[in-house]
Image (cartoon, rainbow over all chains, first blue to last red; front, side):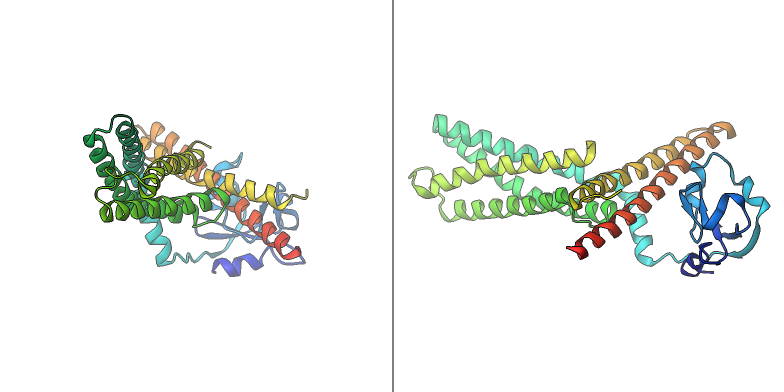
Length: 225
Length: 77
């Protein structure tokens, strides 16, 4: 039988109580420990309990006293298989934690170089800042993509507060990055003639440092709770 | 026990974050099992891996229940 069919045998309202374990369906209707289809106020009949037995204070030996009435047909979709493969690859290579360090470090470096430029007016610091900012923005793309992959395979794309904030601020980070690079490309001598554009350019360089730190903080909360 | 929507969403977040940790722990024990040749050691780590699978299944079950309660509360509003 299929899982949907098994769920009908929940031991309630006169129905029989069936449970599945490692592909076999057992009839536990007459067991004292399965009154009204409920076992130890925790497990319900009509379900596949394969994964739960390891947590029980008994082994699967107890099932030998029950009649096997059918086999359980597994219905693994192609989507599930793809997801399992991706989870295994993700567990092996950890792309999101690896990639996030590049924008994190480089946005910090860009802000530091810009601060030194503002203090010393040395052009080399200005150059370093924009190059670091550019690479940080480029590297944010694979880092955010890996974040979406992680969100999909590890958290089923659930939109709780922490994930919503990570997504919103990641896009803000990226948009500021792109905007500031365009701003710099269209105003190559921005530092020579400080005006409102120069102020905006500076504010956005430092803004992205705080945004990336906030995103990293949220990532830390997910990883280390 | 009645929970508020905020409490349920906080619980959901905790459960969601815990699931991949159980998957990682299972993977860790499965890899550990491969490092040994004696049946006793292999069985020990496989049993620990099975327990992590059990934790994951329990968490997924709780998540389904929380989602159902969140949906119910939102419909009541």
